[in-house]
Figure 1 (cartoon, one colour):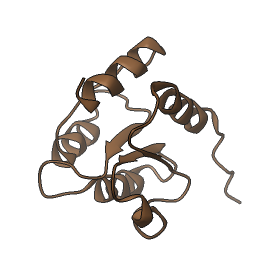
Figure 2 (figure 1 turned 180 degrees about the vertical axis):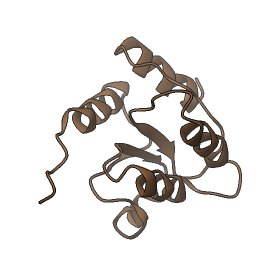
Figure 3 (figure 1 turned 45 degrees about the horizontal axis):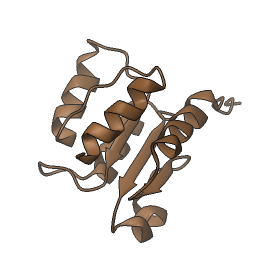
Length: 116
């Protein structure tokens, strides 16, 4: 099964609604449109288009500083420290569907720090 299908199936079975998109540009367009209220992003580091999953997360965080981000990667895990946004989770492929569901749930359940 392609990774996108496995991701979608795991999230749907856990009760999450999903939109499977192939590029960061497509994701940013939908996010910025406000047509849906997105609560988290699960992004492969290597996406189609000109923007990476790293850049997608940075742009989402510019609009929503605590937006939950889960990265997936097969080879770029060592770049997470320098490229990933703070308070994100990285899953290295291959991973179990339960790991994905746990990561998304953890981020959604964390309360953002209060600003003083």
